[in-house]
Image (tube, rainbow, N blue to C red; front, side, top):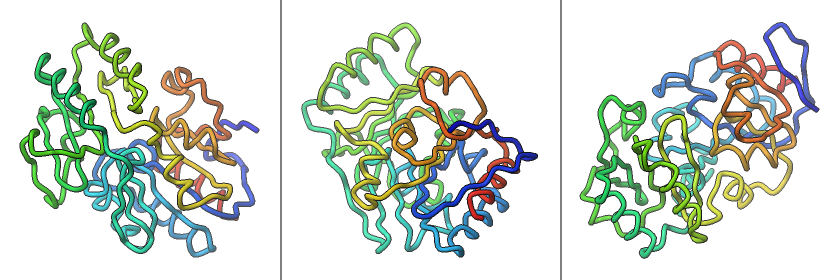
Length: 269
């Protein structure tokens, strides 16, 4: 089953169960908020008895401020699966990056003077240009502290940002060869996400919901989540990123508030 959806379509599904949504680029297009029509469509799903959860690259600290309507009593998967806020509002951590790997990554950071964000369970260490789009998503509500890199002992997620093109491919290959790390590359942005091995949104979701689910995403870090979904929705049109992933989503929808809210409404029939 595969559809390219536009707002004039008549597509509808009989949805029963859990829906998992990526946030940035999927539900939010400015990195600050989810537009009210999309929020209303999500709330309508819940009123109809469906379970809405979120799975983001953001750590919980940065995820909560962008989903204020759903921050309590919902499953929030953060850090690409490395940290969770449960429906009981408990914070739970997956496996951190091991110390040997972390030391190697810090060596690379220092050698090439890379920009980075390193998250632990709540605080973070960051060296990033204020013009980078990730900067405006970093602790927007000032809930944590930007600490010295050497004071982080159990990192759950690392982002290497603005990697020089001259070393990007070699660095990516080296990181991908490490069996104890999970790597997500964003070649168009010259950034690399790093977590411990087997950490991803899908594996973490499975710890809480084992039944069929529906998923929305728009990026490389959504690959496993979308691949295993009963119905998968790719936001952003049939773009180059989708082609690179070799992913065949059930539905492809354009990157617009109107189209995303409309497809959510079509799920709620």
